[in-house]
Amino acid sequence: MKPDIKDREYMYRLIIGQLFYDGHQQIAVNLANTLGCSAPPPPPSDKLFRLVTIAKQFVEDPDYKAEENTMPMPFETSSAGLDLQYDADVVATSPEPSQYETIYLTVHKAPCRAAAFNSDGSLVATGSADCSIKIMDVERILAREKEHREMNENGPDAHHPVIRTLYDHVDDVNTVIFHPRDAILISGSNDKTVKLFDFSKTAVKRAMKTLSEVYPVRALSCHPGGEFLLVATDHPTVRLYNIETAQAYASANPDDQHRESVTDVHYSENARLYVTASKDGDVKVWDGVSSRCVETFKRAHDGSSICSAKFTKNGKYILTSGMDSIVKLWELSTNRCLIVYTGAGATGAQDYPTSASFNQNEDFVLFPDEKSGSMCSWEARNADRKRLLALGHTSACRTFVHSPSMPAFMTGSDDHRARFWYRKPTTNDN
Image 1: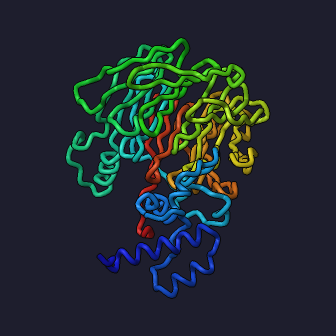
Image 2: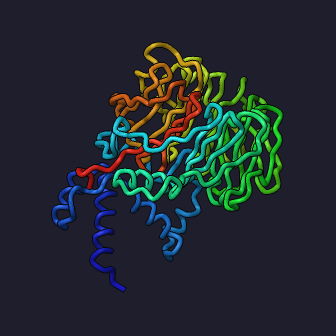
Image 3: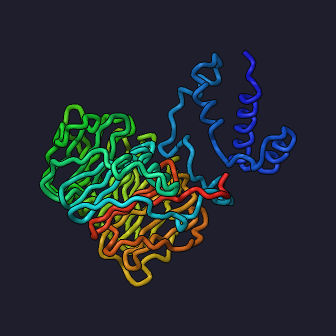
């Protein structure tokens, strides 16, 4: 069956995008002009490469089969994301974070300490020192905003965004994440437990499973396949749980461990690696299968406690933030810091740990400045400082997470409020 016109155009655009990705910009532009592809040209992308990689398993070619049997290098990656090797000169296409506005606000009875989006950005959850967790429907948040703009309200509860409120902890909720496949929310608390909630059942407010720890839980990361859970606590050792059996594992080599409590943990998207951050000032990279430490960035922030560590989408880089109010981008293949994002914390080091994050397409790095109460942002590729965004909280911002799919993020504060920020579409948007 021959591809139709739309299919051919899509294939051509993938080829043009691959040429951009490989650094052949002029060839890509000439090809686009020759084919009459719509402007602007597609951004650099490795989609074609990934599609070909998937297709290899269906091709009866001995060369392809030989490639399939080769083992990948530890830091080899194949998914899309920020790639300074190819796209260092790419101009950011997404809106600046300073253009975001608060379009929804929810109030807890105590400080808001945790927030998370699910994998497709359709849900967002917040956790509080009042022991509660709220799950909100992002589509409903946007619908309420649209109704407000059109002055067509259908009543105060017509599209209430909070779809679940969960109660089962007896102390501060420090971290929340969504299971990557199932309708399960996972939370960690000062009460030294990890709770798993099945939020598909509207009447259920209690956890369906509890994992008991010895120390307060600080961070969680779920294996992309959904079978395993990494748990970081006020202890130097990270534990890996089989979610189904609740069996726990830890690295067998004591020398691999941090020297102080772990503050963050994060799987790469292909789960080959995970990264941990600690109060000891080190960032460690671990093998996702053997749980052996394969790299350590010692004194990553000149000895300051590390607040967060997260992989880029392609797994080639790690973004870290520290109590020194500095954000850094590290390259795994060379084990060095490539970019330092400075300008936050101009009035001194921060008092509370805060995470740094990329926006949805990794054009920008965002980091809340505790002293000024503003959101700082930089272009991810060149550390160009952008305009500040006043967050409007009356106390310190204690949690921040950006949507994986749209120009939106959630902040939570000691003022008991969680704010949903969104860049509203304008008439100039395509």
